[in-house]
Length: 255
Image (cartoon, rainbow, N blue to C red; front, side, top):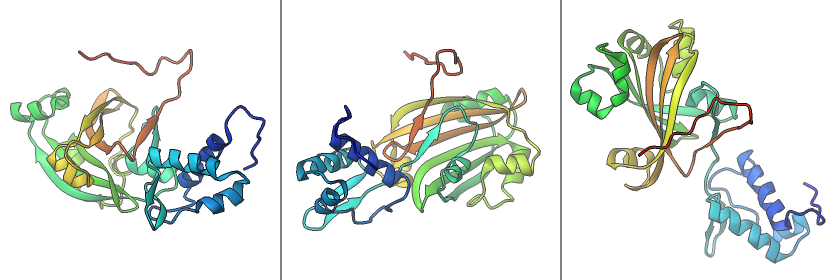
């Protein structure tokens, strides 16, 4: 990257952006030793103060971790999903060049009882249908990112359970094997904190920040999946593109 000292952006900010993009693009893996301040000074032709400010910003954002006496290390991968695309975790990660996997935690029929509705109110849209639960811990490079509970009408879910759900995407199976064409989805995203089970699965402490995404997917006018996705907030974020004439996204003020 060529730096322009006449640009309004400070040099340390330009360096921060360049290094952040390099981490996102896989220049270093998690746990790799990051270049020293001296190496970065030589690379960019700037002072030690400028380099330290750039690296300090990446440490603050959680990309890097300084270990006294050992050096600076890459701390996390970047996972970003663009809203507006009806895809699942596996499809999104492959689109970004990552290799996703999953631990299958549970596969079982679910009756929509009052107790089940109290726990998962979104199931009410399916009436009295018998459902099938696919419960997975979804990973990126072997590290947990998303705890997923995906509910399908029983016949669909039962057939899905016949496939290798540790490696295959649910939406790909739905399209390829079940003949379902997913046409739209309603989705909400909210901030929350990890409870005991979620914390254990996602390898975080109880009370750690998480993002909860609930999605109701349709095939035509028929709901075919309710999914509750719980993401580690330090490893996942959503990006939304907004345009003056685009009314596809709606903000909701909750009491």
